Image 1 (cartoon, rainbow, N blue to C red):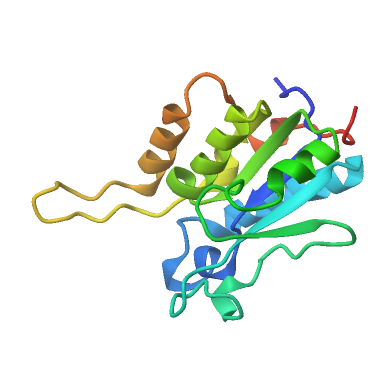
Image 2 (tube, rainbow, N blue to C red; image 1 turned 180 degrees about the vertical axis):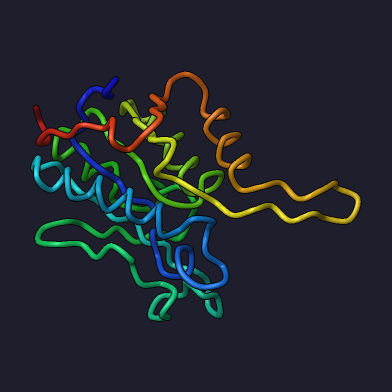
Length: 187
């Protein structure tokens, strides 16, 4: 079953540090390929495309200008890059005004980290009245390491699934990125 069509794709923090090298999310190549598929279909449909890019603090791998900060799926043409300094892609950015200016009612989210930036952005989108489609196989995170006195490590797949569950029933969770359909904004 396909999800109802969305007018925008918001790609959350698909940056080198999170999807390449030793700190990459598990199965990063597969994740990036799925998101690239979403991106290609959204481009073909004329949907609004927004790439969120996290500006890490000085000295971190996602600090602006560092190799880890670079987007793995570079924007094309008129696609927007919205830089952010918080988990929530709406906080202190032009994301809401951009979506509203293009008359977006429903958007799809994909990217990293499931329990932080993806979740925070999804919550704000819902609070602002946008419909949100989240493909289960198009977001990811890392394992939560064990901590003294706090129990065992939690595998990334479990963390991502809990992040989905915590978003409640307002979000439209679909099994696969292939189920997401796109349309032009304002339609």
